[in-house]
Length: 89
Image 1: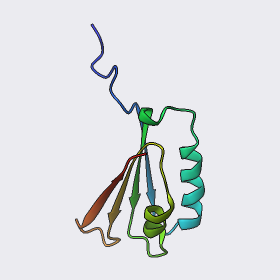
Image 2 (image 1 turned 120 degrees about the vertical axis):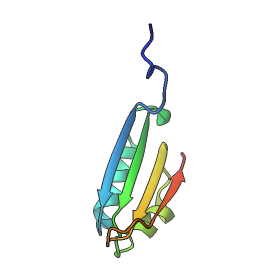
Image 3 (image 1 turned 90 degrees about the horizontal axis):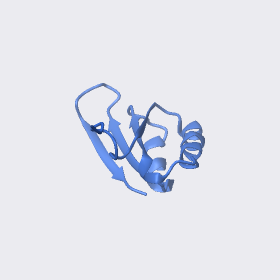
Image 4 (image 1 turned 90 degrees about the vertical axis):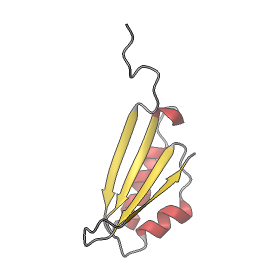
């Protein structure tokens, strides 16, 4: 009997949380985008915890992910207000 997860995509989810790390985040995401995995084998979930240094805007403006990419933005004050953007490569 086959495992229920066989053949399901993606097989790896990378979750990152950030707050005011615009410069560092660009390098981290660039490295993740250069993986040897097939683009449908992994996805990236990035949670921006209310950055005010332009992190969120930079991600939306500059990145072209090769894989499924989900950007979640929440307010720093931890309220339930958040937004999800899905960018597929």
